[in-house]
Amino acid sequence: RNERLQQRTTTFVTRSPAHPSPVDLEAPSRGLHVRMSTLLVSQGPISAAPAGAARTRGRFEKDVTQPRGGARASTRSSSAAVKTHLSSAFQRANDHDVAVGHGEVRWRRLAQRPSRRVLRRADAAVPGPTAPEITVSPSQLGWNTAMSASTLIQLGVCAATMVAEPVLGSIDTFWVAALGTTELSALGPNSTLYGCVIAVIVAYGFGTAATRKIAVALELDEAHRLSGTLKPGEKTTAGGTLIAVVGTTVAFGLACGLLVAAFPTSIVNLLGAPESVVAPAANYMQLRAIGVPAVGMVVALGGGFQAARDAKTPFIAVMLSGIVNLIFDPLLMFTFGLGIKGAALATVTAQYASAILMAYQAFFGKKRAMFFGSETGSVTAKELDIQEEPKEPVQFVEPMVYNFNKKVAMEYTKETGSYMGRVANVVVVWALTGSLAARLGVFEGAAHVLLFQLLSIMSISAGALTTVCNALCARLFVSVGDEAASAAGKALTILGGVIFSSISALFWVFRKELLFAYTPDPMVVNTALAPYFLLIASVAQYWYKTLEGGLIGRGDANAVNFIFYVGGAAALVALWVANQRATGITLIGIWWSIVWYYSALTVGCTFRWWQLSRLRKSMPPTVA
Image (tube, rainbow, N blue to C red; front, top):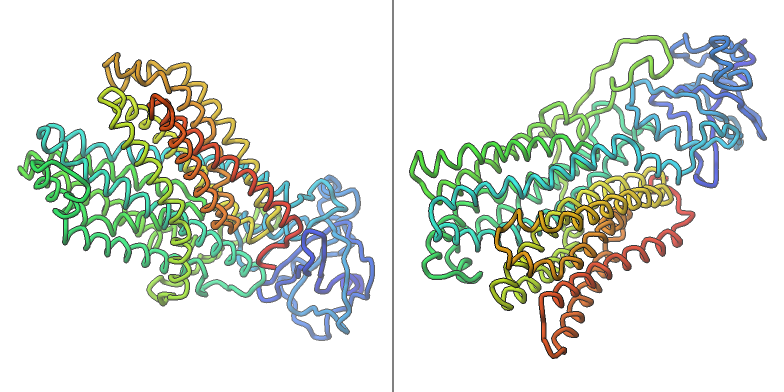
């Protein structure tokens, strides 16, 4: 028995077109065990273990020629299963390169139990053309991952979170309206500052960069666990990255908050407001500035949780924020008589409640295992097809032990800055079209607000495609290669096309009902119905946001910025052409410019996706 074992046991190295670099199956410091069937040795001698070599887990060392489980083993492979025990005692002799003809990787086990995701990633690293029933190409792996139940659930919860945020944010508007017209008007400059400037910069800039940065760090940690270079109880790349990302974003929020708190009246006057509104607007703005650091923390941690494919925690945090705001608004405004200041304090309290919940989960709760701990104990013995063993405890490195990584913080800041062109482009196009519509008249301005409200809701919900595709493509790009990331992006793009085609059809069928839900004025509704088909044409193209997130996840943010510049130029040209007509700029002309804007983004992202896939057709995984 020992002779047969020695003939078949050594460090196995395999190569494949998808993985030109050798893939070491041993990982000696982690005690990796692999069972393979139909193992074909094509060349090179296989040496035995050196004399006196230590053996671990003797119960794995069974007769290599004896199938395990009788009929059960026969259902797994047409040939007898070959069971191999690999440990640090076995070495490759005389530096001979041993080529193993891609056998069926039945199962593998680390000394510390890894998660299902780690096992799948390890199995994907060794393709098996001789076992077509378990062979998964990088493209198929990417497609399967994108269409998995976990990804679809993450997408749905992420969309619900993004839609719930502005809906719950309108609680202030509801209660402040009870104070009077002046107080309600005072929310205008604040909505512009906090909703259209700071929120857009933090979410589309810092949030996007945080998602990608932490996703890459998480995948690198998994690769290091597989190779044995990251052991339980050691500092993780994801933990250090999360601390640097959160610290940098909170620092930006603190700087913005201090600036706004110091000059609220000047900012209100700069944004434009009647004299009677300046005082209440400045009071509200100054108090709301206290919550800007909390907004930064929520966005950064939300990006981290989405990168770890946990959409549940951000959703719970958003719901908690809405509930706290709903309770504290009337309490502070009317019971304590603080008026509009009470509304600001209630919003700040809600923001910090959300931030504290997410920070606790990330740094002290069970969810910290995703960033700071090993993934032991997450796979049952039954799933590993071995005898039951007691679960080993998860080992953590306390977040306080980590030093602030200045290099990661600088890289994160630089990456965020690379997204600012995209952010500024969206703000300018939306603000310009809204300003032009307001000058056309009361009915045209009101009709544009209704149409833009519907467009904004769809844009926010479509942001879930960008977020999920960004995280998924970034992780696949690092661990498996660009081919898998491209396939995942294609799958989510098809899904996005189906979703927004269906939504566009529903919006068209119920167009009058949707508009009358916002206003009972028939004149405004009739004015909005004229360019309504252009709204449908814009919404139908929102599947491009999947490609946008995928390109960012694949490390092509500069191309995304360029595409957005082209889209902005297309919108400006369309407005210029409309202005040259005898009728000048009309509401339909404004919405034609929006259609051309989204058409340019769709065409640009699609072309760049195709071009990038051709350029990186045979690109190996980053970790290799």
